[in-house]
Length: 166
Length: 413
View 1 (cartoon, rainbow over the protein chains, first blue to last red):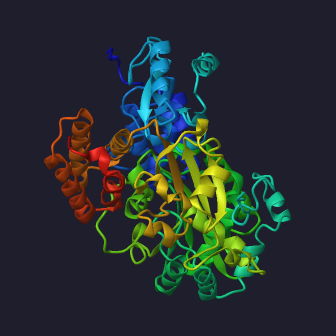
View 2: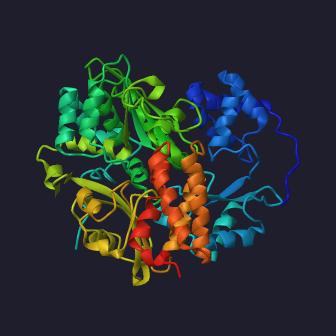
View 3: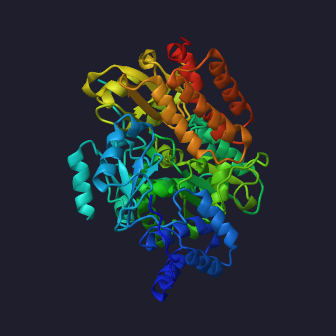
């Protein structure tokens, strides 16, 4: 598996302005830290929380950096490692599992040429195995950047979905 | 042919969910207007008389919960809505928010009025982040119309609702973990006491309710003709949202009168099993629920009847698994869920989940002995007795009930 050895993201003026907006939408309320981190992560192209960003949020909210990293490591939606532009979260729970999510896993792996938690060479896709996100009525389902795509019961549907994102 | 009913779901598809005006045109906020003319005790009694039980899974007497919350003397109290619907196969709360967000807001305001709270908090799981704009919009419009803020409806009642996000932790559906998450911390459960009703969010007396529980309240207040109590009977009065999923033809959320049989729910409402296969097992109430064999099909869906049949209502989920999946495959998938979601704080849950996972793998590989079977039972019992929170206590409900219901799957050859 390839691991990207790259410098942590530099906090641009543009990004810090966007983070300020996120903080403002949460009224600079430090008890909202979990929701703030979710929103901040969505601002980053690779959907993670770079160290510089974590420190910036800590400073702005007058929070201990350990509190922020306690949250990042505790909550599985938050990541301190770069993911991808489109993290494809495949449901691994029972309803999707009995609706043949094995095929969903294997088809995505085959089409993208990566295994779970690997990133495609262009940084576009990664595959993640996640617990139930409540889309059991459309199982088997995946979730990509907050949007649910269900009824993925054929190779053609999965190809279509990837083509839409390309 | 059994039919679903529309009591809790009566507003579904009847109004524009982004418009408070549209909601008010169909009678929205009439229940709140009525509520503020009643003493809080009477509202709690009304809910108690309808025998509404908490719809998150614990099935605690809701009228009693509200009466207790009202009776607590404190300067500041809070109401929390648990929208961290994480039990696999449960998606009724998602549907309620999607199709009737204003009714939930109205229910929360009535809850605040009833128990004399100043603040209400909705804890929405990150997986439902697409519903966040809908709820924020509903809260903002309710504020503009004076249903939130200061001196609501001229009754000197001050109340605001705050929306909080989770971030993918099943354990945050547990009360104390949820409150810690709203406090801006990692959502690790804590020991009780102190009980949430005395010292919960920000150490204030806290009344936590599920989305469905709160959504019932406005309808119940306006139910002059007693439609709700005309459904069901005994301890299970009224209607219930069930989310049916798995290998059924038409999975979905259905509102059923208590007393509908499991067969009617699965075969009439959910269309039966895909390709008309036979049922292997049915799990009730989510991953932490117990399983039953198809013999349960003619049992009426009520708290008492399900209990007699060895399962519980739980989250309202009904997972139907057909014959293609073995009992053991089912248990391994469910076990993987709990092994992933255990927060790791207390030893029985952390180690118990790890070891039962290993033992199930051993059974699947066929190299097990009767000692391994006894081991599972022993560890599961210890977890249920000594885990810190409900997650560890209920994690092996599926395994233990399956061992009881399907002894053949565990027979030592």
